[in-house]
Length: 287
Image 1 (cartoon, rainbow, N blue to C red):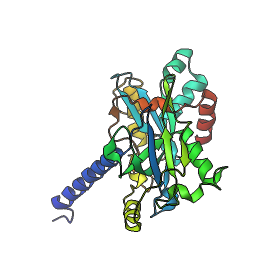
Image 2 (image 1 turned 135 degrees about the vertical axis):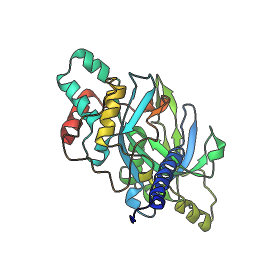
Image 3 (image 1 turned 180 degrees about the vertical axis):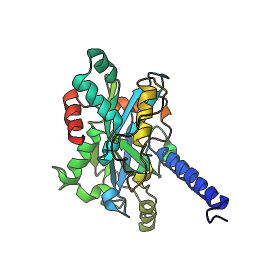
Image 4 (image 1 turned 45 degrees about the vertical axis):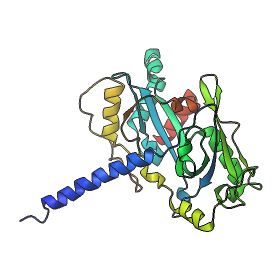
């Protein structure tokens, strides 16, 4: 009788289902930010591994030419791996026709970050107040956070931006509408508004943070090529074999939005996209 039995196989299936559910649940913890509101939060470190406090990633998104629904996926370039969508974008921008370039213009490559937050005031959903959530943000907020950690504001803020105690500082995320896009440039760290948390409460919050490496699921090279064929080229055939060594899934696990087809979010417009020249430079570097 084989050592590998049906019970073992069921355990494997249960583990896969559990992982998918965990990823979906964590993804749902991302706090939406809407224009016209100011959100007050404290940034939280990932105490188990402080180097993983921020998750910096790239993703592609566009309205499917096959279904009309918005599709998006994490780019393997996040981990320095080959990306068939990025390679196709590079090919079109370099040698494609004007018609191809116009079509490819709908495929947005966005640079994003994730960080754990403690929500002090969420004016659009008070149920989030007093809870640990995830903040997904782009270059505007990243610049403000970087300045507070190691830039001109570091002397005033520095480590205080991660402190839940009386010496900590709040992060005021102000979302304003600027034309067709939301802007976050008026956001700031502030010492105004203390929060009253005991040391035990602070420890509980710090221990309650999410592992950012488990939020998304990374697709394989073949899966990404199939997504490109289906939703960009409108072809349903099986993807071509991988022309190079297989993509190495990061040790931290997979990384793409759970469910590749979702309603088009307004958040996609929140980040200014790279220029064509920046895209080409970035893609040349990674190829």
